[in-house]
Length: 358
Image 1: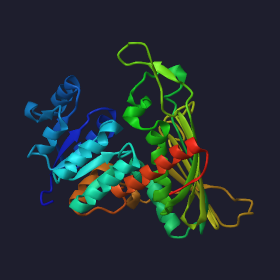
Image 2 (image 1 turned 180 degrees about the horizontal axis):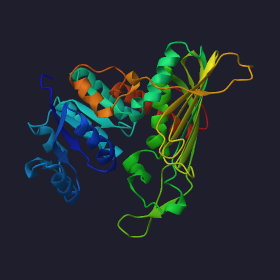
Image 3 (image 1 turned 45 degrees about the horizontal axis):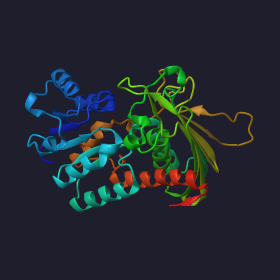
C-alpha cells in the first residue's frame, strides 16, 4: 500500500478489541481507526462517541463497513462464528484483513479462506498474539541457533481461572458451541498449539486428545434462567511433531489462582528452555535457560535478559505487513488453517479415542 497511514475499519468492538486491537491501532503511527461495526447499536454508538468515529461510519452490517471507501483494511474481532463470513467478504472486496483466532469454526472453512486469500494475494494477519511476546521470539531464536541441541520434548500449559463456579460467570458466547466451535481448546488451546509450532519451527504430524466439562449449566445473559454449556472447560492432549518431537498440553479455565498463565518447557539434547507468562501477578513474559554439564551441581535455570530486537507489537506488525516491511513472524491465514486442522483433530480424537494423523 502506498499510504503511510492505513485507514482501519474494525468489525466487533467488544473486549478483545477494546483491550488489544484499539490500543494497538491508536499507538501505531501507521494506522488510523476510521470506521467501526457492531450488531449492538447502543455499544456501537458509545464506542463511536468515545473514539470520535462519525455516525456515518458506524455500521451494524459488516458489508457496509467493508464497502466503505474510507476503509483500507479490515480488523475482525467478532465471536468465532462470524469470522468466516466477514473475512470472506473482505477477501471478495480485495481488502487486506487481520482476523482473531481461531480463524473459523472448522478446518473446511479455514481452507476456503486460505485458498481465496492465496488467489487474491491479499496481505493478512491472524492474531495469535503470543507470537509477539519477546520471550517467545527469543526462545525461537535460541532453538534455531542450536542453543539446546536437538529438541526432544515440549510441555505446554495454559491456565486461566474465570470458569470456576465461584465466579458465577454467565453463559457468554464462549460457552455456546454454535458461537465458538469449542471451549477452552479453541479459546486457549489454539494459542498453545500455535506457540509451540512457532517456537520449535516444526509441524504437527499426529494428535490425541481428551476434553471435558465441569459446569454444564450457566445463567443466561438475558436473565431467563439457566442454559446448557456444550463446550469443553478443559482439555489435555498430546502431539507428535516433525523430527520426533513429543509434546504434551494442559489447558483449563479452572486454574485456581491463575490469571493468564502460560508455561512452556522445551527439553533438548544440550539444554532446556522455559518460557513463562504471568507466573507472578503483574509479571510479563520471561525466559530461563539451563545448559552445560547436566550432572553439575550448579545445574539451574537462569533467567536471561531479552534483546530489544525481540520486542514487537501485534497491530504495528499488521501495519508493517501492509507496508510490505513485515518481519515474517506474524501468523497468516495459512498458519490459521494449520492451527484449525490441529484443533479439529484434537476434538475428533477425543470423540474417537485414538490418535489422528494430520
